[in-house]
Length: 286
Image (cartoon, rainbow, N blue to C red; front, side):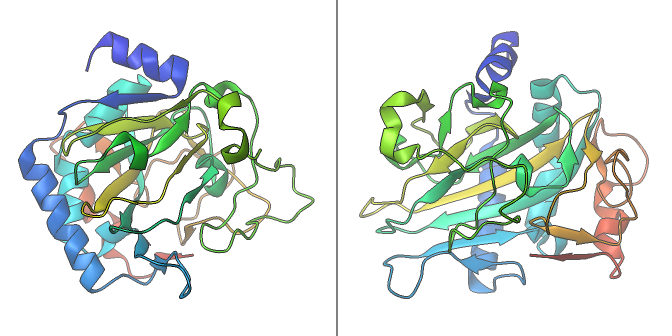
């Protein structure tokens, strides 16, 4: 990473970083994804209906049960990349998700922001989106450049059904019809290879086209990282994912046993041995 990369992230709310993960890490993640496809976790969703073609799988919090994801999260360069991107002194892990669109899957991922789905306030929340397959620009994650500075929060919608997550009288705006007015927005996407990643701000508006490629899969991991000013927040309805048992209240730092500190690395307890991964009383649901 360079200072220019960090400045791009701050200005645009998104930056594409090239060749930041060695082949070992991509192969490790691919093993984890295949395990999840064979036996999806309790938080998984098949995002297309029976009448829609293709295969579109999402799953959350795989690191709770699949060791390949834990190893990547806690031992790869990912947390350090997040720290440098956000200019944060520390980085905590929030959650991980996979997005699998097999060949011939036309269903889009809706335009949305990530942060309204989560109980997080603060400016230092970023997402690392890492493809495990070569991704052409026309099937890549798409982001609206500069939208993190709009000072607008949009109503979260469920990908499969389009259902609103929060009550209609909540303070969140309806997402504009970006797809119908693409020319009015500065939309950016990238040709990517395994080992590249996209870092984007929690309020950057983004979505993804279907995978219309006749021969290439599109498997990707996204990880939500928290920086110095991230605090627990109340939302007007049940968040996704819904974390129980952490004991946090509005304004409390998201830094502790449930949301373990991953960077900087110290000689103390490894994050994978935090209460989040060892205490069965700590529950996660969607």
